[in-house]
Image (cartoon, rainbow, N blue to C red):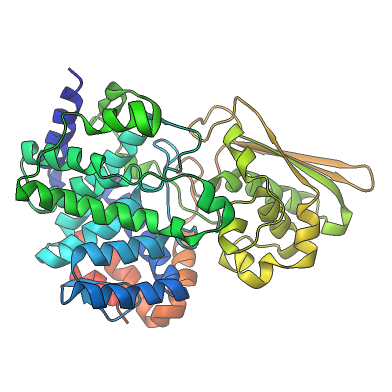
Length: 449
């Protein structure tokens, strides 16, 4: 029966012990937590997120969960809402091509906040994050979302609910109810806010985490759930198909999904990344300038056609414009956070080059495949030369990993302006031993200012 997969998933969440987790899984999870906290810290400095932090403090009242980058301690749902929102705002949060979407920003803020509230150990919180991540990624793998649906938020509620249930020590039956409730509370979001640059889009992961925590607590209040929340949502409203067997295929039998994700080194949507890697390869091999370029053709998965706009109006829209990102890489020699700041978005040279970037589709391309290129780039120069490069796995993916120093360098760049050099060093050291912390606040407390 269809719900058998949910029974197995709930049992996995409720019964997996930290001692069952391979060392490589634990090591990967430590890195994911640090990377996610770096993205949240950097995003917390944006004006709207600072305003949201103050609003949350006013609306929440006293609590034990910290808002990253700010001095406030609030109720877990509010900390999760604000931190999840901040973490996605600069498009530097990690993701997972196998399951699609961004599992960590949908589970880590909630698990940390609930852990702070309960006084949980670092080991317990890390276990909850690993398991919640697994749930999100596996549900994502099983889902064929509608083309117009943006994945942020849609899978996240079930993962935060699973992590919360784990920290609250729910049994398998209670965990299943919480997960099913969460799916019926999932946000429904389109790509439109991304493409227009409406920052309401950044609320999706935070709102998802808020709902996931609430789902666990509402189950304690006596609310009941439908029998199969994921299938109900993804076979009808948000998806064109859902495969329950794919959710549990190989469950617990190999690498955990948190080992199979990617870290971002371009501050924009993932659909830009393979193309940007290809552009950087070409610039290294045969340097050229914007003035040398006649046109650039980027071939990408079909969904990337919605990101072919050449004149983004603002920072967020620029992060979802392949022509802008490619032009920024050529003109600025950078695609980090600085390349998408408002003053760069209006740069005349970049905007002019973006007009000469075309986006073509290859029906065989998919970011869930590793046996075929994810992007091809052809740069046609005014002197008649054509430079071409293709990329299967973007830099930072588990199949094309970045160096340890690159990961730490990214964290320093994101968190340094808030924490300072000493604070960054303490955060790196503490996150590296998160599973040995008696209380998770030994880590999270380092991120309050």
